[in-house]
Length: 438
Image (cartoon, rainbow, N blue to C red; front, side, top):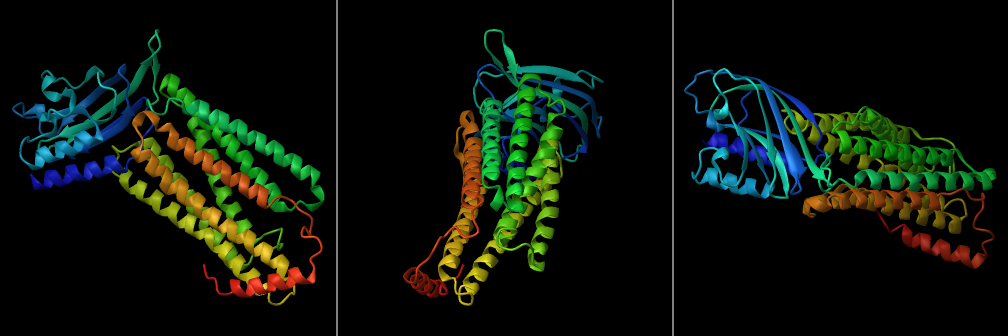
């Protein structure tokens, strides 16, 4: 019983760590699995929610007809209810999660007739909430094999049109499409800026344009992906395009931050060896991160290696976020040293201030999109989970605008004539800056 409880507790951690998935029609193969709890997709239901469950090729490692098959079956449970179910198990009030009055039983295997290996059931929701579909196996050392096809949806309008997106994310197709238009507008504006100031344009500015265009394409593909899932329950290939542009967008964005941090093209035309090493670390890690993201999205928490891939993704993302900060720190130190030797204290102070601002903004962007957005997703009601997506996208948009504005094409000497008093004041300020350490 203690071992079973620990397994259930681990499954709870899986459910808590699982990001709220956008459910669709999903087919899953379970083979010789003896886990007491197998979590499937999480979905936000309205009062008109439905779940269709088709299970076939059912096979048990012990075909004994005397098995208590009421301890095998599917149920729905909220995260809050699951905590209480665990408490009931620990206190000995129940011997199996399927016996709890806090769960919604969808189907138990004692309803199967002799030699029946397939069943289909439709469960209608009466309570609007966010539920996770879970399979429970409370029989010790019994291995279960089966093919599971599940479809979760809400009925909308008078015609009862199916909406396969979770109640909190049904507006996402429109959100992503509107944001893609914003980025297309930004790309057009940036092209205009590059044309007007073509004499002072560097290669980094064209790279910035590529990043904005890839972000726009990524959002368009994501909008279409979610729109098809909303209507049909399947992405129809749009998910492939989404993953491709998501990889390109993520890789180019991190590369851009590194290049700006090094001052490549607008401060110096080359990269030092240590800066090249940062790129050689960031780009492969982005490949690993995107592979992990695909596995996480396509398998779901029922996969036995799902939690491992989740941890890999989080670790790689943290390493990338830390790695891109080093070039900015190096540039700040180099500017501080140059100020003492080239006699351009005022100019270097302005550059130093710019890179310090960028360093702070990068940290704020990383913190907000990785921590604050996750916190919003955790504390927000399931009906308003789209707000965490909007918050993250608005933070990203603000970061793009800030980067473009601060590093836009300028004349080689944008600071005009600096008199002796300003130069002396800047020199004094830089002496104080020497005492500052990041």
